[in-house]
Length: 188
Picture 1 (cartoon, one colour):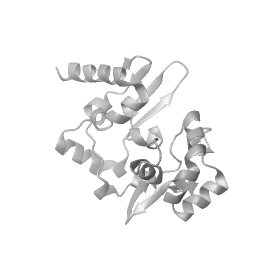
Picture 2 (cartoon, rainbow, N blue to C red):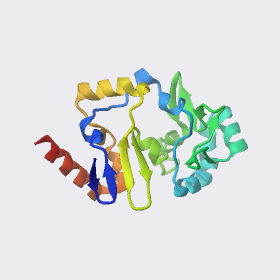
Picture 3 (tube, helix red, strand yellow):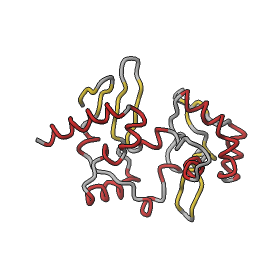
């Protein structure tokens, strides 16, 4: 671990390789697990605002879950999250064949909204935990992503480079530039 501004960063995001391999995993991170995607307070407000615009992109099961539970929920641990369909799929998940995709991101890709998706989804496999004085930035190793780890190794793409856009979105260009300096120094 090392400190970068007001973050404590796991060296795994520099040393581990990762490139999502949707053809292998079929978007399992959006349908497996025991909780929805983590959200910030600001993101809950965005979800409330964009839901009417995103709704036509969603499956009927997702719409039913959102209309029953709300555009976001408070999880069992007290964290804010996306709602789930039957305690499994994220309510915002859609499918292209057997591959899970994000309905929010589809609306974004079509230029209908200007918010890509929750930053926690965009950052994955990095998870950020905010504390009073700092944020912990960690690599989340999940066996459903083994194919992504293999592809990352094959292509020699470290986690931090794979999620560059999301890290810049979360922490800013200057923070990311400092992260790159640390990565270069660690290679020496």
